[in-house]
Length: 238
Image 1 (cartoon, rainbow, N blue to C red):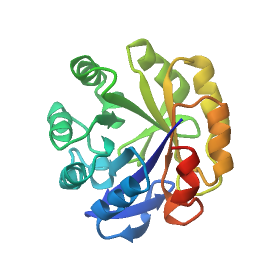
Image 2 (spheres, helix red, strand yellow):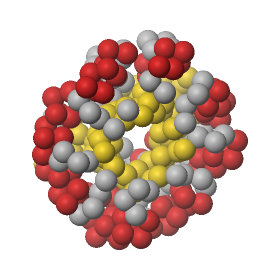
Image 3 (spheres, helix red, strand yellow):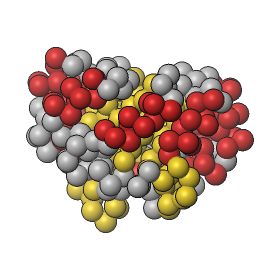
Image 4 (cartoon, rainbow, N blue to C red):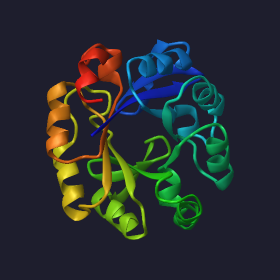
């Protein structure tokens, strides 16, 4: 299973939110590039980079952070937040993203999303399935829908989606464990999808369980920043 540290960027700084609440923001570092270098020095190969300003806007905002990190590290970056148009997809790839993660546009602009999937391929376009009470949420998690997350993923897998990052919003940033039951439901419905867990991971035991459940990857953010999981402890998983 791939271990993927996360950097969330807001106003150019490395921050973390709790349950997607922009009012519950904590700044961990003024310079995301320094954080990314630390991850690379610890042996990590991948990075999950989120543009929080872009997520609740209609376009990418923090593309300069992506450009700087990709230019100063060898990390393979999946970039999300604010990917709402073909131009945003182009900018993300031009600024160094290896993969682009699309959430809101996959809900509101299905035709466009499928066009990007066809144009760039299933190895480079990731579907973000962010859910609250197993219903998809969009626009930086500020807007809830009535779309069932398990069915949402299944429908897109049938269209050729290979990679899915699924975040249980109520668990995100709470350090109380990930959405094991939800991930079981998703994999039961779509057993071939490369599912990446996100939200709530707080211990090495959580990672061991995710490996047992055969997830493709796990994104870790707050647990690292709060010292619940040390980078040295993750060496065995890298």
